[in-house]
Length: 235
Length: 238
Figure 1 (cartoon, helix red, strand yellow):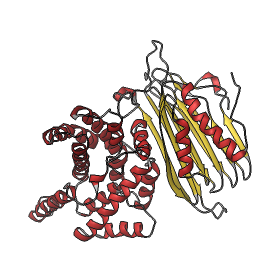
Figure 2: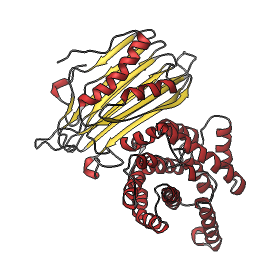
Figure 3: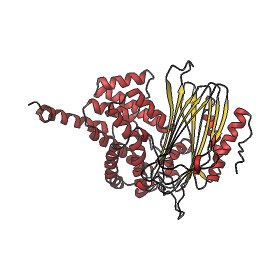
Figure 4: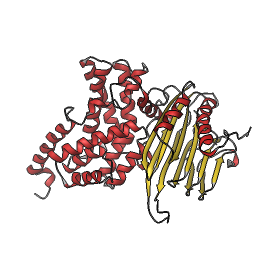
């Protein structure tokens, strides 16, 4: 059969990437996500995020803004074939709050290391070389997209998995920090399904002019975290 | 700069090209607020290109932006600085104007600043490096833009961008301290250092243009005095 999409070998490959994707999005993947609130700790400090409902409101805004206009769009441009070093530089330039930029490159660096050991590919090696040569910073969404692309994970599947993994680690961090009950955390995650699906749908309609259009409120809160005295998180 | 015809209208395109040559300094402001009237089925657009030579100094201090009901506006500013030039730009965006007094009745505002640093060889043939991409998109018809995670309950947005090789963490902390006590929610952070120069971004949310002008004015006054020995900006336009 010429149509390889339906061949048994391809179905096998599909099952192969599913386990890989599960490993990459498991919250036990040691990228250090437990150390980052990506700005919500500022809202806790101001008393604005204090329970399941208020954290849910913040999380929806974060998915619709930060994750859509920055992470998801970066991943789509990579899948569309954009030049990697230029895309990496765009991410560094548009992540204006310093701690967000550092969080992205810290977790990105770990993801590149782990990926190199367990899912090596020429694409990932090329990114690793750019980063070690100082020609790229090594951002988390790009590292994830490079590995997912090398494993032939379809874009929307990779994106939904990445977004939900980020939402999951943020929610686990909120469960510890606010604190919330474990079941409340699970309800927040269930409630975030629609936000993730909306982000996956939205990113199809966005272009380069939209890249980095994160709301001022989220950015100011991320910037203010730099000067917050008592804090549990690095961002 | 004189805002033509009183306001921007649909399908208007204004292009502004400014080059501040080596060693020169320029203060660029507007004659009055930039107003965007209704732009049914279209949008008004401004494309600005700013190039700063070695040792050049540019202060960009336009009046506030006001988008009327059913207005769409795109502002693209492309800036190329020299590693040894100095850029200061401040901007205030209001919640717009509508006949019934309600806020955020415009369709869409896009303001995008792209800042590059020119290669240090100075022969103009080498590429530039991207320093900062400051992108703002507000589309009130698509959902609530006033609440937590967007405008945080405030109505006005101010922003200050400084690019200079004297920008460092101590300056960021100092400007941040200047904003304390104001009725505004403000954050300050730094870009990466690219070719020896660094960007400082200050964003501030408040409920009035006046309050934001105080916040931004206090910061620019400090920099004008310290770096150029100039008095605080007083344009006496009104």
